[in-house]
Image 1: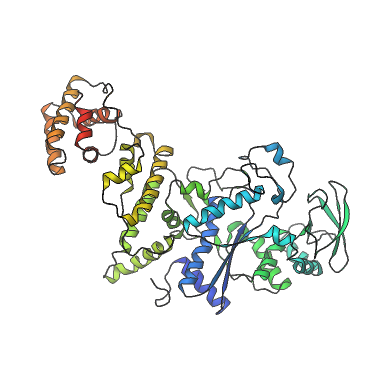
Image 2: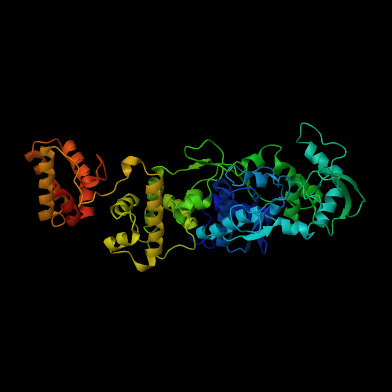
Amino acid sequence: MNAKSQPLSTHWADIAADKIIRERGDKDEYVCASGITPSGTVHIGNFREIISVELVVRALKDRGHKVRFIYSWDDYDVFRKVPTNMPEQEKLATYLRKPITLVPDVLGDEASYAAHNEKEVERTLPIVGIHPEYIYQAENYRSSRYAEGMKTALVRKDDIRRQLDAHRTTALSEDWWPLSVFCASCDRDETTITGWDGDYGVSYTCASCGNEETVDLRTTAAVKLPWRIDWPMRWSVEGVDFEPAGKDHHSEGGSFDTAKLTSQEIYGHEPPVTFQYDFVRIKGGSGKISSSTGEVVSLGDVLRYYQPEVVRYLFAGTRPNSEFAISFDLDVLKNYEDYDKIERNYFNKPENPKKLKKWEKDARVYELSQVEGVPASLPYQIQIRHLTTLLQIHSGNVDAVIEYLGDIPEADLERFRTRAACAWHWVQDFAPEDFRFALLNPEEEPFALSDSLAAAVKDLGSLAKEKLGDIPEKEFSNLMYDVIHAHGLESSDFFTAVYQALIGKEKGPRLLNFLHVLGKNTVVSLLSRY
């Protein structure tokens, strides 16, 4: 679907891209932004903002525009709370009220706790085809890149206070300052600004260690703007054209409302085009995901069970302002099946005009779901339920499954291996107990059955030896029912006995198909023991 030669699709990313072009005018380059404080594990809810921006970036590029996609690590923020999933809690607690870039990495060997969280994301995003330009705000503040922006805030202090007070129930005090200071002696932000010389000099005292000094905004690494002023200041510095925000920021009087005023009136920058995105929940979870508590699911966690294209599909196929849940139960199978369906349909474009509209909508979702471009033809597909059966038959050995299937094109092997690994992880970690199975060892004592059931199972083994795989499945089914009737059994009792003989459980995959997937040798080796 070439956006340069066709009308914009109705997909929300294309609609957002069109709005950006209309409102910002024709530009040589559009700047799209996202960012977060790496105060804990960057969770799948945070990822919703990242991929929402990336999808709009793709939509703009599909229109033939140059786009700069920036991702800001707000790593000069204060370490306010020790996440509950972190080791060495007492050690981390000694770094409270310091910049998170000074907190040690207790999980690895990165330069800091913040860097650990950043690098984890930076390693993972390319897997789903996301490649932003990273900006590290601690570096920017420490290099005094924002000295002029901070001075502007001081000059316009009263105007900024008016803007903030308009959305507060309690007015800011007269001695409020639009800056925060990390003490140069103890690194904590428990400081009070005591004066400003009208230029670049700012004086402060520290309640934590008693330090007093005057610093120069052009050379100090200690001073920064608070969030509600920092955000619009950076919009002006980077020339941001588009940035979405969560519904908490978009609430009336929230940070986006005040940031728009500050951007326009203080920094002379038209606030970016935006939209609101809703929360992502984990099915069965207690509520909104939070980094500070440590009770989170990361993108890496999700990729353990979902192949990258399916992860992108879940977000590309859902409007940003709709809350939805990432599922790890049986819905995983449905999500794969839904993705496979739109993939098949993409390569089967209908001629019927009535069906074409629905096809175009799904086709755009499919295009945006791809990691690095749309395949030239329909990739190899395997039904996810069938794959989980094969993996359990082969005890998770992907190579054995590939050998069994025997028809996977070389070009699709890597994608197949990724899906197989995800499917096996899901079977091990989340599949319901009645979904899981393992073949019994034919060298060990068989599962105990009544005499009549054992005789029927033995006859099925003989039938399998003679006919399984050599005659059509329906014909084999008729002969199997002849065995059931010959022994005067209820089919449900017979099926239970066969499952018990094969996997030691009362239920399993659809029996007739299961027998054919197992193959003659395996079925005979297990059933002929009776």
